[in-house]
Amino acid sequence: MKSRRRALLMGLAAAAAPFVVTRGWAQGPAPFRFALTPVFLDNDAAVISALRAALAEGMGQDIELIQRRTYQEISGALLDGSVDAAWTCGYPHLQHKTELSLLGVSVWRGQPLYQSYLIVAQDDPATALSDLRGGAHAFSDPDSNSGFLVTASDLAALTWPYREHHAGS
Image (cartoon, rainbow, N blue to C red; front, side, top):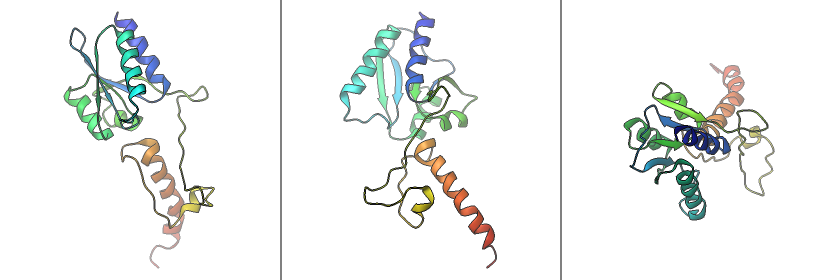
C-alpha cells in the first residue's frame, strides 16, 4: 500500500511542479491533507475535483485539499504539520530541505526542468527582457522560481554592468 501511494504521488508530482511532504507524513484513517498553491485557481472546480479523486483512488484514502494563497503559507503548513504534502515550487523546498522531503519534480524535455513565460501586453513591442526597462512589472509570489526569482535575477544581471560602470558618478 505504501509503495502504491508513493508511486501515485511521484507520478502526480512529475506532471508539473515539485511536490514535497513533511518527513513523517500521516498515514491512516484520517484524510490525507494535500495543500495546493495558487497555481490551482479556486474557480477551476473540475480540475480540483479530478485531482482529489485521482489522489483518493491512488492512495486508497480520503483526501482533503487545502488551498493557500502564497508559497510561504504552504511552507508554514508543511512545517507545522497541518498538511501532509503540498504541490509547490522548488525554492520553498530548498529553504527547508532539512525538514521536507522531495517526492518528485517536473520533467521538461527529459530533464528535471520546467518552462514558464514572461507575458507582455499584445501591443507591447518587447521581444526580450531588456526591452522591458522602465516599464511596470507584476510578479506572482516572492518565493516562486518562475513567478519572481528567475525574472528578478535576470533583471539584476541586466543592470549589474550599468551599476558597475556608473558607480561613483
